[in-house]
Length: 333
Image 1 (cartoon, rainbow, N blue to C red):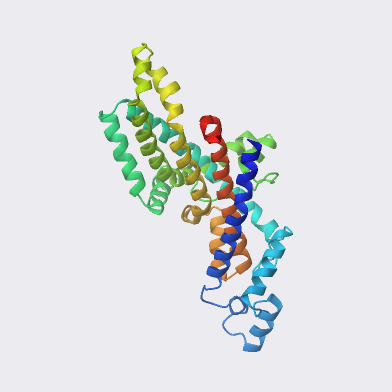
Image 2 (image 1 turned 135 degrees about the vertical axis):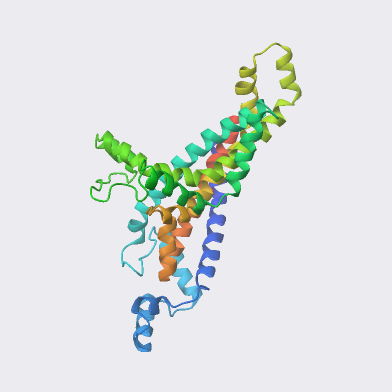
């Protein structure tokens, strides 16, 4: 197992290197001059040229990329052109905010999706199966921004059940410890604060988790139906095992691998693709942080943000691969 993990970790090096090359190339094709954006349209050409020299933007691309990679290998993500702060410090709270949102979104998506898929397969062609698959199709097809705005209108404005914006009450900010606000509230012993933070999480987590929920439900149903028609399941039925025992002990474990693959992929996608949800709910996550950097032509922030997202994406896939070996020991061979 250790050798397997080491091999997979070594494979991450060319993946991240390739990602850094592609990201660097694409970013420098973005129209606009960061120096011009920083100084404004009224800046003189000499002032723009001086700032470009100070920021190293007038150097050849290969030199800029070499400096960037050298800094990355030393643990330095660079300095934001906009805030003049170290990106490694600035990006951390935004990353944690997105991880917290993604975590709760995937809990919702996995719990509802897996159980809906199991029941649909168990009650194949029943009214529940048809209804669940129609809802899943609707969930996949529904734009995230439409669902998010609808949630705000119904549950925040009309019913006033949940807050519509932010991670916490604006007038009473929490003192961060880990920057996971639910955990920080519990560490402070403030359970009312934890409930308030969870209320802020509810609407964006549902909006973000709806599409993964639908995909997981469809995959679970398909995988369960395939396993339930297997010879060994018919043998278990012939021995007189109960239906619940067959479904949750024998079928579910053997149907888990494709479902686990989808869960891992969707978790990685949500980490980098939550920008619409974060923008609508004013969630200070990494997607919104990188989006604002794009508008400002803040190259170091864009490069570092994408690289961090890519790193977590491949780490999640690595964890999924490791879980495969525990679920199905044949994979390690």
